[in-house]
Length: 117
Image (cartoon, rainbow, N blue to C red; front, side, top):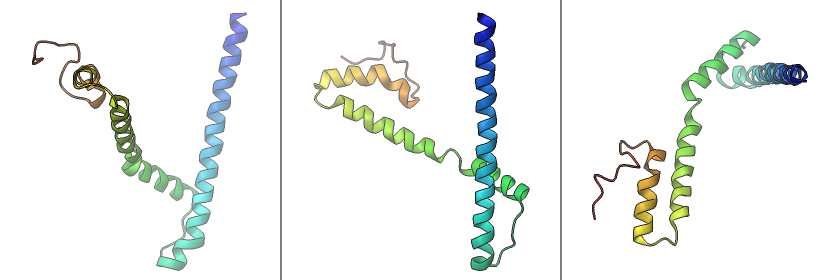
């Protein structure tokens, strides 16, 4: 019975990988079509081929792909403050002390040695 689960898991992984390849190919094709339909007429730049567009998309992802990470940090910060709403000053202080690792601070959230009373 374990081999059946492994086969199903392997098939599922293959489908996910295959689906990812199909989606990447479709996105590249659409981006290439949009580029070739708009950019040469607007800016006078050259038309691009499929592999050039794939490389261009990879370059853009490498340069700008993590920009959404800064937004997620902002969202986590907002959610952090939202959770503290209605807490007393002491409850907030303890909550912050326990959750400092979320914001990549150097403090150890379990270290009480530096805690001011």
